[in-house]
Image (cartoon, rainbow, N blue to C red; front, side):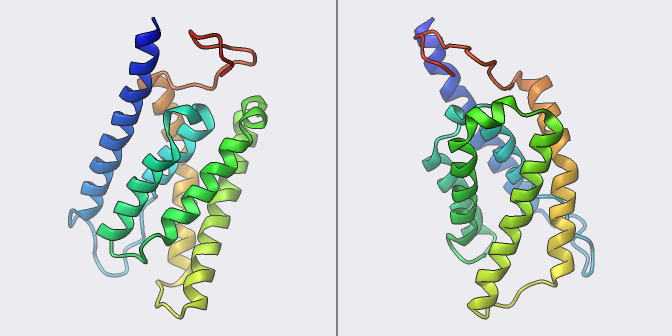
Length: 179
């Protein structure tokens, strides 16, 4: 049974990497990118935050760093800025796993929504300080609002398709360690 526990971690890490690559591939496809079109949600961010809230041990920090740094480089964003903001946010959530385990979904959704809004504000503030040209503020807010709206769908799909849930209070793994 101990081997299965180790395999489960690697399976979810590989699955996260596959999902990230698929979402990045879909973002690169020229589908509906007409000038002036509204931006879609950041589904990769939603998946990352949903998985961190549910099982932070499945997503180690280096994996998140590699995925988001690669996304920065491929999408030609300032290298490392968005990745650093995502790392800070996920580590904030990881450090409060005992608190988030007890939250109802509505409160969790509000917490993640506030973090998403804070992330985009910090990102735009740093870009503004560096005088980097940016898309209009309205586009960024629309993308965040879409991401907030899609978050419950991502959580539901993670729960139904992958059985990814928050561990119950006092639940232990096969080695007797608390989850």
